Length: 77
Image (cartoon, rainbow, N blue to C red):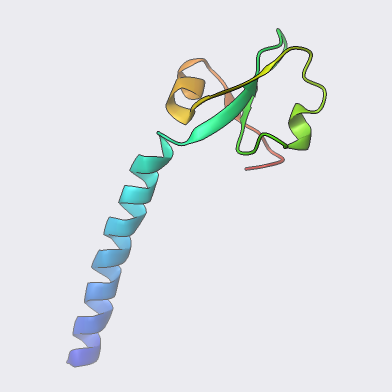
């Protein structure tokens, strides 16, 4: 009985933790290239996907990057 209660509690707390991490990830800082052909956002400033950026690299929230139509970089995500 105690084992079942512990497992149930662990599952409930795991769901709460996962949901809060997901909510916070929308406020995470990501990096974008401001070049005309850039389409992605990056987790790290030093991602090799940003090596050929023709303009500047800008930091902004992940939600703002998604609003701009950017998708996650396949290298760093």
